[in-house]
Amino acid sequence: MGFFDALKKKGITVGSPLKGRCISLKEVPDATFSEGFLGDGVAIEPADGKVYAPADGEITTAFPTGHAVGMKTNNDVEILIHVGIDTVKLEGKHFQLKVKEGQHVKQGDLLTDVDIAAVQAAGYNTVTPVIICNTSDFQSVEGLSNKDVVPGDDVIQIKK
Image (cartoon, rainbow, N blue to C red; front, side, top):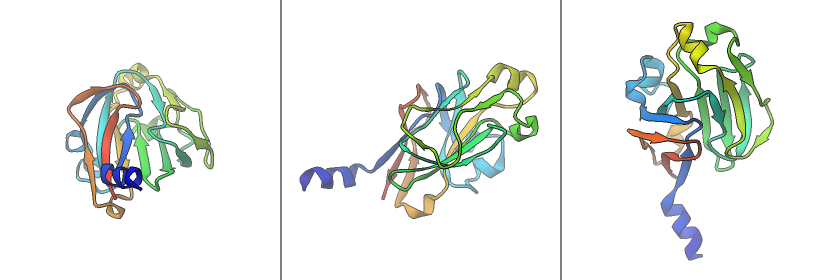
């Protein structure tokens, strides 16, 4: 029983879906994200365009445009990964969605592939919010920002 008590105290961690710089959500140039309207989390300034599952779970939303993916982890954490600001306006150009709704994924599975340079050249900011949409279901959701990350590095700590 001691092992499970230790797990409860540790909480749940969410990995980075991208390689890049992890920053505070408050730094995202869009109030929907920076003011926490969708929930708490972090943002990643991507170094490349490979977007991976940050945890094991099920894809709940796979936007056909590839700019955003929602998932529910095996720990009931609802995560939204939104690549860039206003990138839905690209209508899928420069995005290759690799998953579909209802698909089960493991941490590290490729979700979408983005041509980051092309998105930036089209005039879009590629900062990528990683939001815990059901923040209110937890005691706390803490972003572990201000560090360089690779996919899978801990970026969000959640206490039940």
